[in-house]
Amino acid sequence: MSNPNIVAVTAIYGTTTYYTPSGTSAVVLLPNAAASGLVFKINQIVCANVNGSSAVNATVSIYSNGAVAQGSAPSGGTAYPIISTISVPASASVIAVDKTTAIYLMEGTSITITSGTASGITYTISYESIAA
Image (cartoon, rainbow, N blue to C red; front, side, top):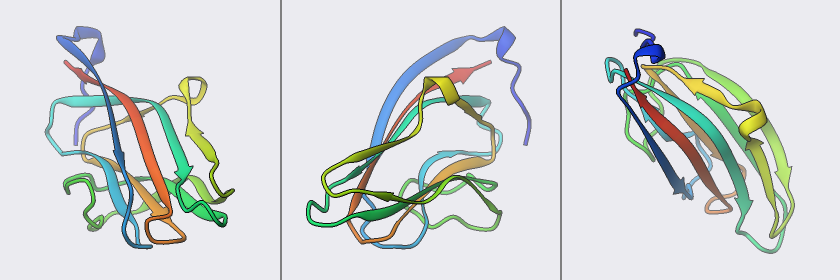
């Protein structure tokens, strides 16, 4: 797992993706595979309660193994919470990360998400993929 030198940037691509977990176990929202040659600057993560009738807990973590696809269970590694078991009111949203608290996702790591209710939270992530 290396740390690409972003002084020698060759490309920056802005991307937004989203995922609604169908279960209550941790799954990957955004993987950055080992040896990808990329670093991801996370600009925003929004947790939107789509349940509509009750509050749903949300957890967003950086996970120390990023080699699995979005929606897959993380394998190996350790979860380091960014927000942990935050109650998102019905039909409301919580911002887990924004530009004032932006983080870098290094090679071999991932962003994982956990919902307290199946299909209760849609997670949206906006990030820049930086190639060195």
